[in-house]
Length: 97
Length: 207
Length: 259
Image 1 (cartoon, rainbow over the protein chains, first blue to last red):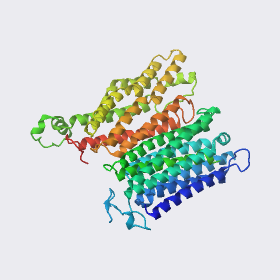
Image 2: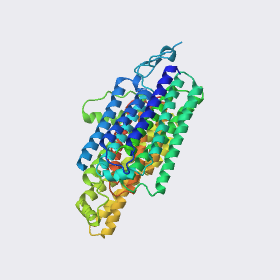
Image 3: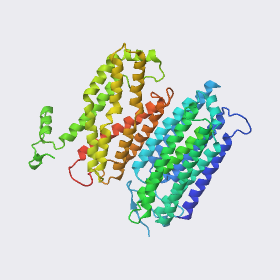
Image 4: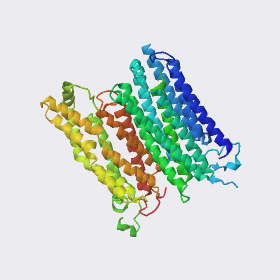
């Protein structure tokens, strides 16, 4: 394997692992006893997950080199899913606030 | 010496020594396109599950938040990292096979497979701990979703491991070694990985 | 294969009736098309009966109490009896579906055992798939003045048979999936083999309906019924279309099937 592609894949792995740990830290209780509703945390966590999924699809699944229709379908799925999740969360939680 | 391999999409795949510093190929669909179609269908089904989960969650946030606290997030993180590393091995395996370094590729797919076993083992341990604490499928709505989503995902991991097994079988003998089949198995395995990324975020970490 | 292949058939006439007669006499794929049209007719009839007449799809609620359930039987009295009466009459048509699918496996470059085991497994599939439900619910509807306890019992049995029983479909789908994926004759596309995995998973998902009487995992829930049925509908449409294409491509030979 050429050095550059090996390096690239390893870098992607490090980035994915790092933002996993960041996501964990964001969601942790920071000293509070109970979990509470937290819009910014939820938003941040979901967006981090989105970035991770996109990286896996683009880099590990090699969508980067794929025809544009494949990339567009993948991105469309991700946007629709995450958009719906965030919309449901913020609208739904708005009724409880 | 370079080889131009015509793929189903008519794209030209460029051998490694030709592309130092550049990307492998353009317009190349890794593995069978059929597998990508299937990945899309699975992604849509899981999206429906995730959206259903979120709709239920916002109707009783206190219940979900209380129940979430009983989860072991550390195990969730460990499982996420296990699958990420496993995907990394599989991505490298595809590259190694492309460069015809089949002994290396075989080691990498076996590593991915071992990590798959580790993922399932850890999940079983986590489930048994929770059941021991009296938290099971019908305890409340959150735990129904928790067990359902993680169990259906484990089913997919098992299928994924069968596909990895097919890749192992292909790589072992010089009579086989179909690049297409190895890439197809890898595509499915990466899907298993990114689905877990979403499940981890939605079950363990969102508030 | 029909012996008339030896002589060339006359040209296809115009006019619908004449063309049908021509197909009856000269088309070597006649039996395949009869089976396919029988399958399409059956699934359409199934939809009309189960959705429109008997109101079994989408299913009523599992958490209803006894009086409400008795009322459901009364409201749907004639729909249940007439609708399922039709099902009892035509249930033999499922044999056409199973035969066509078994036939698809005969052309594949795999052991004949796949086709035979699929047909054997699926020949009993009509029982949990619709007949047990039909029997339970028609018995319930037959005497409106029956003991409500019994009617309640028949209600549970009918719907659990319909939504919750999936073992037969699980194994059968698995057999067809393996057949399609290892086939080298390209009889059916590989994406359909993978799609069988989706159908397989749905069989596991419905198992939750045994545990829950309300919510998304109940027999009428978003996950155990709606999403599951959507996946099954996509899968069914896919194989109906693919079998049609297979019949068109059929050349009664051996080896790979032309695209």
